[in-house]
Length: 112
Length: 114
Image (cartoon, rainbow over all chains, first blue to last red; front, side, top):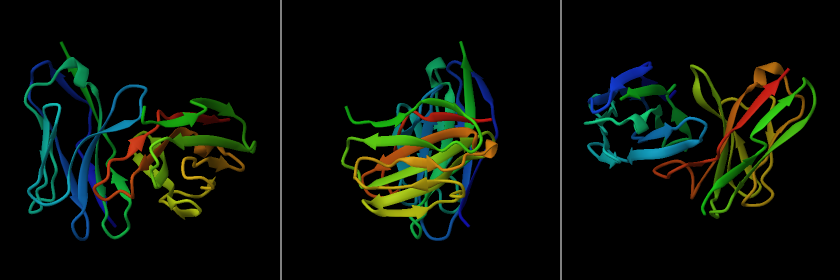
């Protein structure tokens, strides 16, 4: 079945460092891909999405490109801030079942 | 303000005592769903609903029931809770399904079953 694999955390960075959180997926067909963010004590919020191959999603300085050839959707940010500290979830939406499948989440901790 | 609300936010109960977690959205969304979040497992879908009176099982439906009598409400029912249902629960809604649509999540309900 479909699945999403994320790098394990926590990822610990200093402010202004470059961030990459790896995400790869397994799916039949062409899923939509998402990154959600969960701040402490809150529900998940959509960060960005891409619905077809080579699409780039971007928001709040974060970017991710839908790479069909490598089945990846890595999240990047050029300069992280303390306020970016949160748990990040990669997810895919299966076209056949219309279900949302999440990775296990990656905790990011940014220190001043 | 567009939002998904859940109640209660925190609940401690005992094994076998029936409980209901309410979920309501004010965005006229057709699609609603319930997830549980457990450490190391991410979010797993319990049940979902494509519209009023239409519900279907997700990946981990055992021990749970849902109903969708009105478009805005989607309660989660645990008829006989057990300790393995101790978890963080999220309700979510979207305009129509998951493909390409943003899911709006509630703030979560932390349930402890002793």
